[in-house]
Amino acid sequence: MDATMELNKSAIAAGKTALGIELGSTRIKAVLVNENNVPIASGSFDWENKYVDNIWTYDIADVWKGVQASYQRMAQEVKEVYGETITTIGAIGFSAMMHGYMAFDEKDELLVPFRTWRNTITEEASEQLTKTFQYHIPQRWSIAHLFQAILNKEPHVKDIKFMTTLAGYIHWKLTGQKVLGVGEASGMFPIDIQTKKFNVHMIEQFNQLVSDKNFTWKLTDILPEVLVAGDNAGTLTEEGAKLLDPSGNLKAGIPLCPPEGDAGTGMAATNSVAKRTGNVSAGTSVFAMVVLEKELSKVYEEIDLVTTPTGNLVAMVHCNNCTSDLNAWVNLFKEMLESYGVTVDMTKLFSVLYNKALQGDDDCGGLLAYNYFSGEHITKFEEGRPLFVRTPESKFDLANFMRVHLFTALGALKTGLDILLKEEKVQLDEIFGHGGLFKTKGVGQQIMAAAIDVPVTVMETAGEGGAWGIALLASYMIHKEEGETLDHFLSEHVFAGQLGSKLAPVASDVKGFNEFMKRYAKGLEIERAAVENL
Image (cartoon, one colour):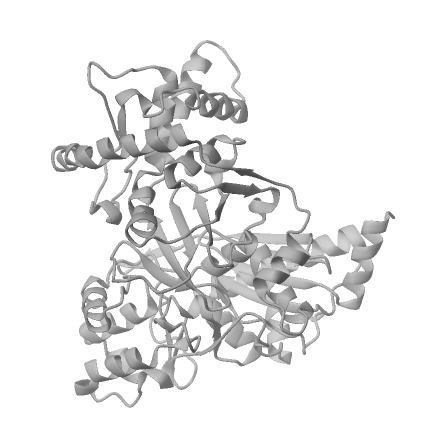
């Protein structure tokens, strides 16, 4: 057995490991890391949300089935590779997709089916709360769901004893602790950046807003306690150990870190929790998270405010559309090549076409495209129609065609980020890219740098994802030195010496992207006409 295997084997036996389990929208994943925070085993479980009675939901039975299966598959891999049975772990952390609504009664029973972040049924609540708080409350936030249930006069509201998120629910059942990490909590209700707790003034405003309903509870009574990264969030109970590992091998008493949301774990997994950094996740949809140095000057409906796992303010720009239209065109080229009898290697095809885009004119030769498969709230569209448009004078060739589709994949995102970078003068030293757009080396990275005029770094570990991110937060809790910050821990003990590539923006690309954006903004009327007439 080589030295690394031996090291991992002894870490497993001695419980010098950390485990992260994240419940994503299509997959539940468990990642076990060693003392150096390197993944040594993993397991996953695929699941899908259901649309029942006009609500996007997941069965609670499936939650536990998925958590147990992903843990069991990870433990099985440990047994097969290292010959060890897991009985203890240094620390465990849970994370899940943020927001949504889970409300429980005094018997700890779920009052209504879990309402996920996907539900856009809270527009009235979202608007009223944003106006009351003078703080943007998106539809997917837990408080918007609660207030909408009140506006709808839903009978269950009077019986609420506790409300939480999916990550908070799992943590509670395993430890008995009704707590949330501050990043996850920031998607339930606004956080006071000074205290790192829920905003007391806004809690009072909410209580005032519903005072005529005469509920037996006040908002503080039913919300979880807020913790920051590094805090101990309880230990695995006997009951919790059996729930996580029905085989009975896992012992109680293991410490758990605060449960976090997928936004916070994404920040940890990309080393972007420090101020003046950020990360962009670009795949089917795209979102950017920028860690701010101070509050924004006003409320923007295009920008959500959440926090890092340590409670620093983060501006989030989320767009529904990114690579779907681009992928559809690549598939068309694949079909054309196959018609010639060519066997197509998709990785190579993406690489050839993406690299072709770097040979195009700075401003895409006057071409225009919209990648709107669905609506896009940043540009105020309820529905979308993918479009490609040109004038007789446009320079229509393959390089410009690919370039315009890469540019437009980031068009809505740039619209939102320009509010931060140009109107609010937010300073960004570096942004970390991850997701499908960055798979072809250097290309998506160069286009992103052009869009935001900031250096873009892509790490080789970017594919590890949120389960690794929450494992890192669990590891930080038990391994941090006195007074050590999370950003120092990540930089020194996780990402030091890691391979990654950093690309600075090219001035001509930045100028070209800005030219394209003038065309993009003007052409939104064409997209509007397409939605109305197609």
